[in-house]
Length: 428
Image 1: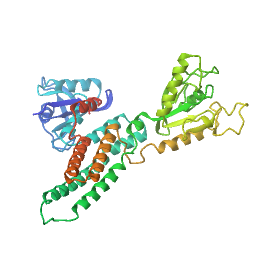
Image 2: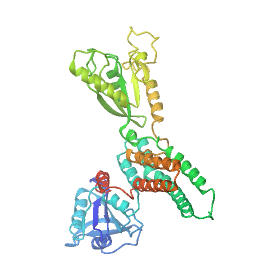
Image 3: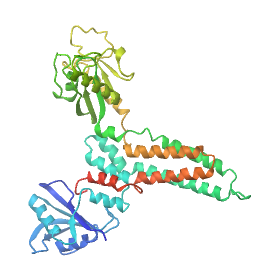
């Protein structure tokens, strides 16, 4: 029998309401001990809570009794909707903690029980984790799509198709030595089905990255010394994040500044001015780091000579347009971070470019673990489609099913699960 756990599942007090959640086989007993009765299941009921140790009143609260398995954790659950003052919550938790059959929940334990009882799969759990950490509307929408099972439903479809193909392969193997084969073109139909499924899976390999959505679109400002990179970064993020000076080589290391613009998360990186020679060893290290940042960039704002742009897709910025020595014939977006000329146009360009890198409305983004799983499944399907031996094909399909089990969490390592659930708050 699993232990019964409790925790405050709402925000830290003081608050208008504090929701204390209890889950496990003794949840009903705990509720009865506090309220003196067990309410009608799934109907809110008002009651005076009393400490079972001495009968002292604790709070007048709204009660919910939720018998399992149709609960978020798959177990019996009780919820106490109390007044959210610190003293009230502390008293209710102390009364629960004094019950020998109850203990405080650990981080993520409620969600882990939901996972263990099949109420959520691993992808939905990761979606919930992303939703709790969401800071932008795009992050919220993508996390909600994952948590509501859109990706899991697609995986379930793949599993059913894999099972059908595996059954056909087994049938073909069973009758391979018989003269009376039930379906003469079964091998051709298996091959066609495998490749059609491979195409469907392969289309998802290039799905947007959850890491990019979470950490922000990496925008690197690069160019020669004194090109106006730091001034432009400060203008874009709305604060003095980088030191601005007319002295060449002022920026010696990467300066990373997160910012949300138009509901999209960006990570702006100011870099050391790029030049071939420098007598300063520290500046040389900064230049090397600038080149490394350029390789990892999603978007590059190039403030130098267009012929020296590091990538063809770099956005050319004709910065410092307010300076008289720069003519109007410079290629790229004319911009002055000091006067604001061209800044709105640049923001529009950044948002347009970001929209091509992030999930659209109602779409989800994949974590590295999920992308790796989709890629492995695709590899097994391609190997099965190219196999000339039915035994090899059947084995590749079996490996594909095992990969799907790993994607949903039906097969996985405890260490990975421990890391995931430890990131949740106590009441989740």
